[in-house]
Image 1 (cartoon, protein in one colour):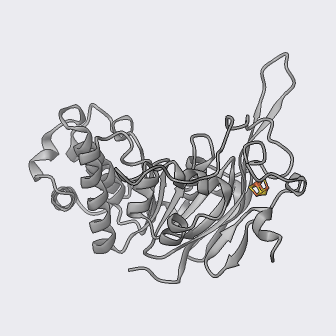
Image 2 (image 1 turned 60 degrees about the horizontal axis):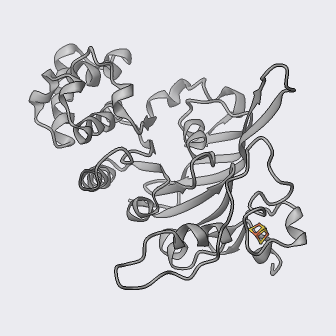
Length: 324
Ligand code: SF4
């Protein structure tokens, strides 16, 4: 159930890395460069962008797996400053992360039953018999027979493994899941099954999702709102229908235009985006998109702020801010 309550808020999150390759001078890589966003209880906020745009880093910071260099995170009214986000404390059980490749996060030597029971055992939740009952119930909930508890990860298909990855994240009854490219390694038919499972679980368990993907069709299917990232910044944030029907930022326009048109409907009209993604160690001054933007202008040497140009519609581009 979507609501207007904010469950998670990121404020001016930055994440940078210092790269040292002796004898070259040290360089700074800005993976995330001032991201602020709010996630409403019960919604799916999609985060989309090219590889290297910082979306997974934002997901890891939002799930308290990675400390930010600066900024703060507020979850259900509890604020953690940037450097303390790995000190998860009471929030440990309430925010969980689902990986793109569940196989790498599942110990191949353990049975599925043990892998699902472990989070409960670590938290000392219930006795052994109770925990095993919870494992069986969870297997049924994610569409697998309880007998799967006796199997090992290598005996499962890709889709079944991702169901286990999701089940593992749910064992501690979290309220918030960060889903990082959860279907990108799966066949299209299996993708649809997993996306539908995620939607059902969201309804049944009142979950909130931060859904990270490079696939615009997938993001369109699952999201209520979408944040578009480019080189560490959010360039547009809007309701999913508004964003796909009328993308405003030139980068969003190019992304939406890159979605294959329906057969027989002819090519889409869109601005041409040329050139490669700039090196994150040497970002252009001002708007980071200016090296590829067909509308780049002198004023784009100043960094555009992400501002609300209509209710619920935020854009970081001087084409729009000029009219405010
Ligand atoms: Fe293009 Fe300028 Fe807008 Fe950046 S600020 S997207 S360069 S028009």
